[in-house]
Length: 171
Image 1 (cartoon, rainbow, N blue to C red):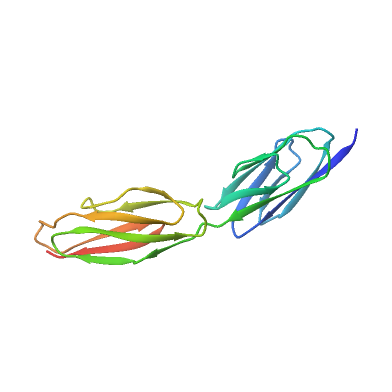
Image 2: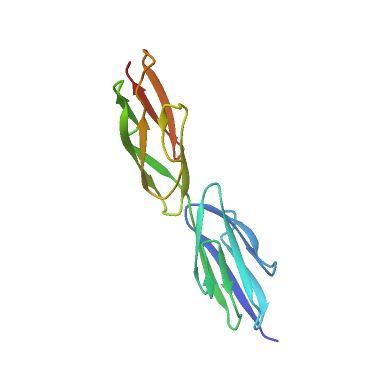
């Protein structure tokens, strides 16, 4: 029976683990960036990648079918090479603060992500600021600040894609 070499490579700015369904490939990137396994002619194999530390992953190469996390080769009938790109999810926000009068209002924050597949959340530490919570990729977050009826100046902190956004509101 002929055997063929399956080579799995990983590149990119992120971190990931790669495991084959046949057990011969099991490694972490960037500790290792290439692994190989000899497979029997006609064998199917699936490689599964998991982005770690917030990284996102995507396959390319000799995959018969693929998703972001899996690469399936239906039949090993020649040497095959597949490549996983692991992208670190980093974010920036603009602006980083906003002041409101006592009447409150609406505004937005622009979030730039390093990948359209990077997931992130937005939260407020104050009940008087409301916003949606789950996002993917580069997006604009719209938030609402309620009227201040407390008679004192107040501050709120939003955490948007891991970044701090400060709201101050007059009395």
